[in-house]
Image (cartoon, rainbow, N blue to C red; front, side):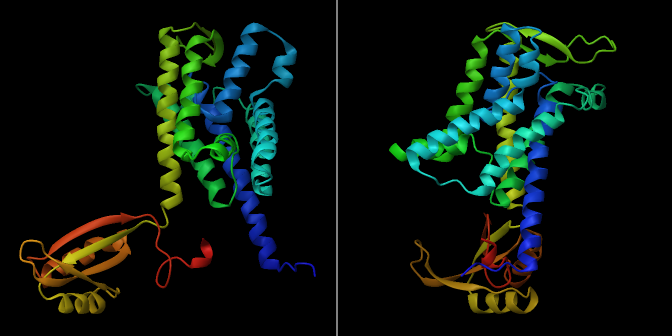
Amino acid sequence: MGVKLSSRDILVGIKEYLLMTFGMFCYAFGWQMCVLPAGGMGGGAAGLATLINAVLSSVFPGSEVIADFFTIGNLIFVINCILLILGVMIVGWKFGIKTLYCILMMSIMFNLVSMMPADTMVKMVMGVDSWRILLVALGAASCGVGIAVSFMQGGSTGGTDIVAMIINKFRTVSYGKVLLMTDCGILIGSLFLTTTVNMVPSDYDGAAELIKAVGISPLSPEAFARMIYGFMMIAVIGYTVDFVQSGNQQSNQIMIFCKDYEAMAEMIKVKANRGATLIDAMGSYSMTPSKAVMVVCRKRDTSMILKLVREQDPDAFLTVGSVMGVYGQGFDALNKL
């Protein structure tokens, strides 16, 4: 029997693919309009493609073939296709249609965004002190939003994800370590290459042409600056992805230790309109059995609960910890997982 799709399922699917398309646009915009004009560099497939494009442009200056066919978008597509083939050969077919869609859309968006004036964002921040750092941070945040939006819809940008799957076929290594190793390799490798990148020189004198081709020599101050920008970009992307993905799910877990735990739990139920859990506990100093009151709440409700606890028992001992996601009655539905 064939699977019947309701109109709601179709609309949800359309929404997911539109959001993934938007995410890939944010990623491409951050790279092309912010990071590259500031002379920055990053990791992943986009970083490797940028490095290859810069090297080819330096080896074959003025080549129309390089300008037309070996664009960053096309190189990203080629790199991801090679990784996909290796992934299928080594770990089997474990890539969803959404991953393939994101890989294709990333390449398309890079080529589309490259048609925009390269000085679009530069003109907006030129008057700000340390504007190049600001531009790299803005580009990294845009990339992070794009990655997070795609992840939340079940998509993936390929690149490091595929490398991690291949490595984990032979040895268990966390995704974070794979990301760090590959990105560091790309950034450190860029130190030893003579490349030409489109960047705004620091001694910009107000000439009409904002974006100029600047040669970066191996181990030069410009090369080190570009590498530092790359590490900063990796950090900002990681933070942005975590922030966007957990933004709607951030909650706090409050542990309350007090003498009259039953009255405390009742007060939380009545005044805060929240449930509480009593957990067996024993102080190591007094060796007196007791119970701890555990409350899980949204971050916006934490301050209110703490004030109520203080009013109920000023001598209560509390701990507050962040919780990435809470699912079940009163929180996010389990079907969102």
